[in-house]
Length: 466
Image 1 (cartoon, rainbow, N blue to C red):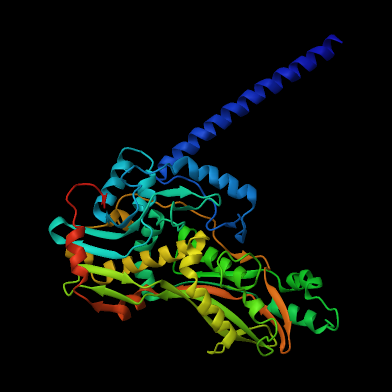
Image 2 (image 1 turned 180 degrees about the horizontal axis):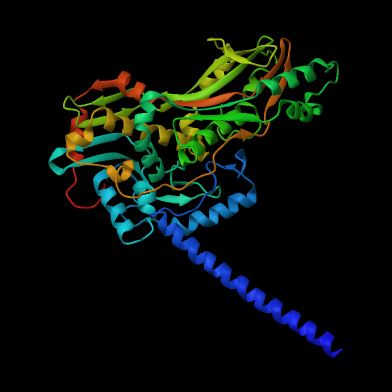
């Protein structure tokens, strides 16, 4: 008994001691984690979701679970405090000095401080409408509408009134660092089924017998299993960047709306499947949609010191794909009328959609920032202004952006509909951002931009002003 009691006591003591060690190690890990967060040069290590879309460690893209959204929400709300009273104003035009913003970031790094939320969210800018160059002040300024921000329940940081997402410093940095690469190849994401999956699906569909009372929903699980995961392909943009996740999230959300897999938050926009229920495209033809830049014009003064981005900035495009016997998809160069009608309606409703799903607003913000970065690079505005954005560009200092999970595959979320011409499988999609093409083709002299230029000039040392 004595030995037994001793062994029990010793075991208990050991468990207690071991627990203390684990507690100490956990505390140390928290300290190290905190140090790493600071070593990330001001960016909080948050990870998480964009527009309600999550990417796991294996690179699988899917709708974020309630638990994931809740955890991400807590993380974001820890850093996204309410903006100052002056910054909380709803204004039609807020200016952000890139050189002074860079100095503010540099100071935070030197003092080993985390970046403040006003820097992370670029003073609450909702879009970039203007780019101004002030040589006498060695400055480049971006400007646009701005307002107070809140953290919505889906963990998106959005304007308190508009519901549209704010611009993010991460995306600005990636845009500036991607300009040379995007001149050689457009920034794209495509989500496509594999040829093997298409063949398996075709084999399965040949065995399906339709008739009175047939319900496609009964075999949809088997169809999805046969179809298999779709592949995500990204070009030019870093795979582990927030920008990459934004491209994928927006494309994923557009596909789900087209396929009728989620509720559409705006009136007047139906799913594509609802539109074609009584008349699918020809057998062997499947629609594909993608989103691309669509600015009306990039107006600029003759001296190129003042620029204005005009138009919605984005549109949905479509093309029918021919699917051959081996499952390979080839663009036809044509679009069926119903698919084009859906793309047109989606474009028409895009601005409204941005207020409900942050993925769409984030994508447009990313497009704006890539246009801005390209204007600066193509017209050597740093040289004109007599400034250098080396820290933001990654050519000087040690400013690193957080690493996000790289997207690789999407679970077989696709819809099927049996029409008079065969099965329609809505699965392919994508995003294309070709900022160099937009800047070269849409630039247009308009001296009226200069009137805003003179009003926007800074009168203080602040990095932002109204």
